[in-house]
Length: 434
Ligand code: AMP
Image (cartoon, rainbow, N blue to C red; front, top):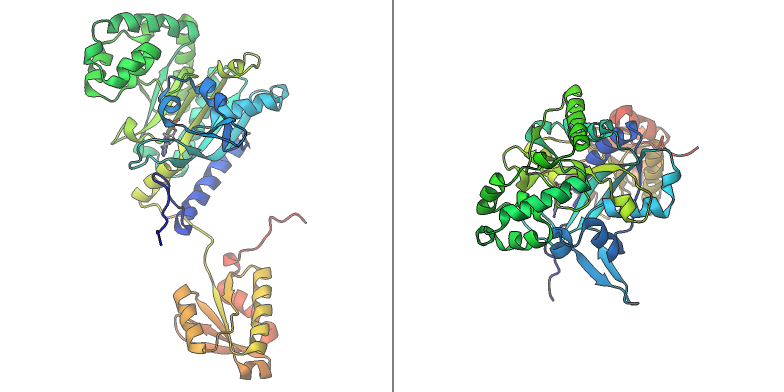
């Protein structure tokens, strides 16, 4: 029989890793909620056109990295490679443009990119992202960057990253700059990598962030975008920097940062790994003032970012951060015989109702085996109910670490156990709607 494995570039998230996912979700949600962001989920796949038009069909993601499929009716669908295009589609589909602006949304979703798998690069990965739609004020640029900065601070990994920022100006600035780049690269094509020769035809701005060494040398001598920026774009950028200064956020201006997608305008930013740079960026984003209009809406400025959950978790592990979790089993319940098992089952249900994390009540034939099982689960306490205890209406409560045992009346068991476990360690359902 063939042994099945996860498809290349994908991974299982095992319980010990979910502890990190849950923690990260909690930390992000806390900061998002504080700033007025509300959660949105869009489907895992969309009409392929959503991404092709949204991201631009010359971008790496669209030209090489999408998972495309056809359904039974021949519709072209694409697994989402990023979050923004789907959110903007939903924003328009649900007339969210009538909501107060900025409309503040966040998502936590799996994304899919058919990339060469390597460390920190998967074919299915998760992103946390936010979008602030409907506001052009540079203060909102600083505010959304601040949220990411704050989350990394909360996670105690901020020092591992350097914030890179740049401006891509507006559409007109870009058009002029594009022309300038095209003239600069005339006659230099043969020194470029294959990808860049292609990019030159379709999206010359992308030549600036190529990782190839020769391309980088050429890019460093290319015309500077700042010489083509309009006064309005310069002012926007200056304001963003002033506001970041005000918030005490350090940044490095990086004229080569263009991000991979066509929809960006004005501010773009990325948090780079201090040791590995862009290769292992943890997240990034920027303004996309043209996207809503491109999808058929009214002109609507917007800005957002996304972080890669797996990369964040990897950094937390590297930094030796241990996260608290509520998965601590306290009691194993062992019983001998059917009547004892019935008592055990009832006890288990009562313990759960009061918030004690407990398992057992399986009534296996050997008490020794059951206690060994308790040992393997590492519960600090075990309850033992044998024939004698059934007759006497009692149970034995065993401290698994010391081996000490006491006989407790069955009806007092739950209270006695809670005293041993401690009120602070209870897992109660205070969140349930009453
Ligand atoms: P991007 O918008 O492409 O810059 O992606 C934002 C963040 O998502 C990146 O900085 C990474 O942390 C994460 N990310 C992007 N692609 C992948 C991938 N293939 N595998 C894992 N994480 C990814």
